[in-house]
Length: 311
Image (tube, rainbow, N blue to C red; front, side):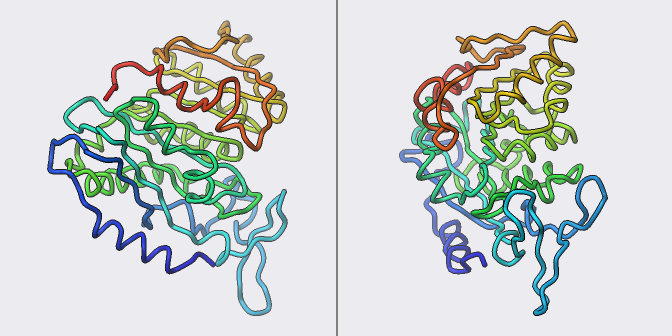
């Protein structure tokens, strides 16, 4: 079961967090983990193909669970009930300048504080990129071998999540929520984050705001979804860095694109410009890919090449 003390602490952190006056640069980095109403979980509807309910197991004591193809049975109260979302902005963040929102989808076996903040240094990498960026990272299945997107399978739900993120970032920074509602977005997914990323792209909830997509060893399925999105959104960028774990999925993307006359680059991009398409092979280990891939700290390296949003 999610730690209720952690959730309460998150609420208190939001209420007590020092915020910048409206329009002022932040003198220090700010972050918090808070519960969202529009969170990926709990989810009590059907699987996206409609074949069965997501919660397909009921214990004698009434507990409900989901059978994950990789992890076996996980119980809702332990794995699929954490509403937490990480919100963070770097030192020097200035809402008066152009701002980009980086949305990060974690992989399997992860929690926000231990893995996204600590082990993978996502907050630190966004800050070190030099971008005038806000980071948003929802909790999916908690500490489990499961890539389920939950409510993000539902068309329109991710837009609700982003609207709530705008409210949270406004409270954190002192800027107006309407400003965050209009900010462009970069979607980043690592490993099992591919499933919610694929459904965000398929559903098109924020197509008008999406500058581009960064995948970090993440194409384990839905190659056709990613290839079709690239072909339809030639003014956006798409970078997928991969190791042995997702090499076959990336090969499928390359084949599908080549069949449409689109030839992805195999070289790291000098800039993340509109229309950049790059599939980057690496021999790095999957478990440490967010911090060590084709370069050290690959998320920082790629975001630093997105021009027009410097602090």
